[in-house]
Amino acid sequence: MHEKTRRAVLGTGIAAAGSGLLTACGSPGHGAHGGGHADPDGTVTGAPDRAGAPAADTRPEYVSPHGPEVDARERKRDPGPVRRFRLTATATTLDIGARKVKSWAYEDQVPGQEIRVTAGDTVALTLANNLPQSTTLHWHGIRLRNDMDGVPGVTQRPIRTGASFDYRFTALFPGTYWIHPHSGVQLDRGLYAPLIVEDPKEPLAYDKEWVVVIDDWLDGVGGRTPDKVLKQLNGGKGAHAMDDDGEGTGDGRGRKDTKGGKGGKGGGKEGGEADAKDGAEPPAKGAARGGARGGGPRASARRGAAPAESELLGGHAGDVTYPYYLVNGRSPESPQVFRAKRGDRVRIRIINAGGDTAFRVALGGHRMTVTHTDGYPVVPARTDALLLGMGERYDVLVTVKDGVFPLAVLAEGKGRSTMAVLRTRGKHPVKLPRPKELDGKLLTAAQLKAAEEVRLTPKEPDRIIRMRLTGSMRRFDWAINGRPYDPSQRYPVRAGERVRLSFINGTRMWHPIHLHGHTFALPNGGPRKDTTILLPHHKVNVDFDADNPGLWMVHCHNVYHSESGMMTILGYRK
Image 1 (tube, rainbow, N blue to C red):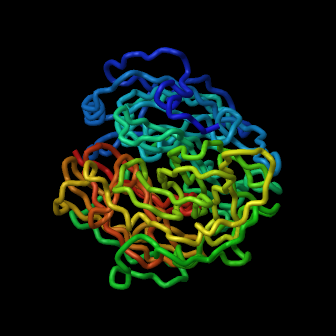
Image 2: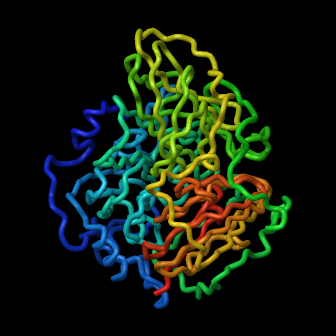
């Protein structure tokens, strides 16, 4: 699972339903379908009023996700051959190595089946919903057409129980991406899968490729579910559920230089621009070391539990204690084994699909060369270890030594770890010590530089939008500019602008901030990314070009923070 030879990677259509390639033509045919029926509570579920119906009428001054501007932008992408897929989201029983658990997953496996296409292909995927809740599918990191972004109440109506939805878009840019729901805290179940967009002119040379998806796990353990944990954390308020039927009708007023509000009412120090330090990333060395154990049997929200602390993350590391941490759906008691020959050059694509955990990753006995982050190439850089916030991805190259080595994954600040195993010989289990590389040189995104071919052209921003992250761990009242998520909120941009997002963390906790539908550049020639770590009381300015019209989410990728209010919307004005 998730291991491909170089020949297999470039020579076959992996996970595609059907054997042929079809030619894309015209505007995408997308929409929802499926018979309506009654949920257990008596609510009638089924298809929206019409295929591809927008969530609601967009206010006239903003581009609609289903507007002609979105179609026009998609035509400019010059859609290529169609690759067809089908996924079913379903309740199931999963074997995670240490035990079996009842959860939700795609096609009864975790991670879900890898989706692999070539840059320029048209992705045509039908998602069938057999879950007891509505759901959607978000294509994390993909710069796609807005109506396919998978945000309920904003870009589409939710996919009701028993219904399905056809997603169709051009995957224009190569890279390492992934898919997951954007509905409540479903992400923290087993609903995720890697999405790999290959470069038809791949400049890297390697013998094997491994996809590594890391995750924190509590669903189905001791009667716990992510929904119950969220209620524990935010006092029973539940998720900031996105409206099934509309986007809201607020006025979305904004200014060219939109300043942050006064912040939330949280108990922690509210650090503003004056006391926020420049730079989004943690220091290169030092951390709460954490243990080398696998997960135990207990899952809890962090309230009342021992604090999770990490110097790398600036203090508090997370809100949730997880009983298990997984690599490709396996606990360390029964890890995935990758096999190679001495001297093989291996590309490893690493994805953090966790809900509340940053992970430190190292390959025992080896150094890694970082080649990409969030799908985009960087100037190659050598390191012993990496730190990934939720939603981040890194690609690395390693040259395999002879022996048995742990691909060690530390739950940063939480005192637990997991692993996969690299073997060049033998098959008998061996005890693998904590690799020294976990405590060696650690690269952060702030130390990387974008490859020349993907750097933004230097330019002063046409618009600056200040977003101050507010809230506290005590009240769990997470918000942006002191305002919890409201689907009527709009931060306006216009097509063609260079936009600067100035993120100011006024809270005592770190946040991985994610922008939909675009990639931004970190300062001073830094890498192109869609997700970045923002430490407590720090500030980072990121720039992007407004070239993808529609309504786009900005949010913390800690699912318990976003669903408690730390998300908002950028809207393109007509």
